[in-house]
Length: 439
Image (cartoon, rainbow, N blue to C red):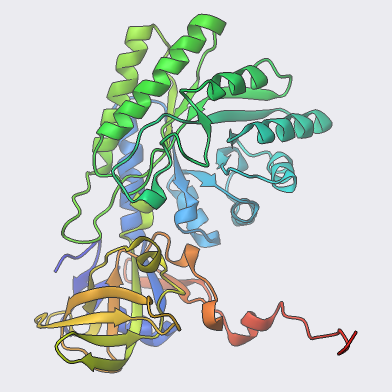
């Protein structure tokens, strides 16, 4: 059995996380429950930042908070000297409420609203990553009305296809994101923002996809961006001060996954950029990256209570848990794979095969198909590993199921980071019928 971060098995045969018994956490906070191993999050963050420091390259490592965001998570990011990547007004508002330094916030998104951009200006964030011509027009209007400068990056699609799921590739030409680097869109965007009184172009941004295990795609994307920067330097004497190469670094979900250590991705990126700076006689830009899943994905574990069981003779055996696609839609959406253990029997042999079904009213609500597990009984606690990214952040109230609680653990201590929703929370925004019948 592969254990992650500080996970261990104690003298009672129970899974522990951060020195805390998973069964104790389930009993204390209820299930479903997301548990985050803060020591592992910090280790990942320091791995990225430390590599840049060791190689003497100026950089910002921005946590891509769409993976998982809440006030406490943003405060951990601040403690670890990370910057922050937000993609909505809600994430930006949460970051500001958490006390995160606004100058280290970068705002992404392919359809930012006028109100969201105004919030970015009013809170004086550090940078807006510009995605399209409509946004350029909005930024000009807002900056001129407020007479306020704003640093920007142009997001471009370099035409690099990552080896990943079709739904999570974003660097190829056919993408809803960014200006195409190869058909003249990026050049047109450059012309529209350079020399503007208030918009200060720092450089370029790209993101080629997610859950990537090779460095080749990142190196090729960096090469294409550097070639464009060299072209703009020669034609317009443009000095690129920031090159943002995005995120997408893979993690281990199952034994088939072979992720690289954070420093390997970083070293290859730096090597490519330095090589092209030398060839094109360019000043080395500051390099920004945006890890999300690779910071929190394998630091998160979901705990469930096992309930009903169904045997389909000669086909499969089902066990059902008290959560499902309402707290982890990735198996239904991406055919994502996970591994699991029965937390209160973690030292026992995995001698049974079950399909783990959720409780939602959908036939496709299956968290793991054919999971190798210990013999399961109602009341057992099932721990599914590596649910820290895009689990809670994509959770819903489908079937009017309340969203789970989130707990942080570290050094034998635990604290509630997000309260469990109640039924009252579910109906708090509902309004009674006021239309009269027949009107």
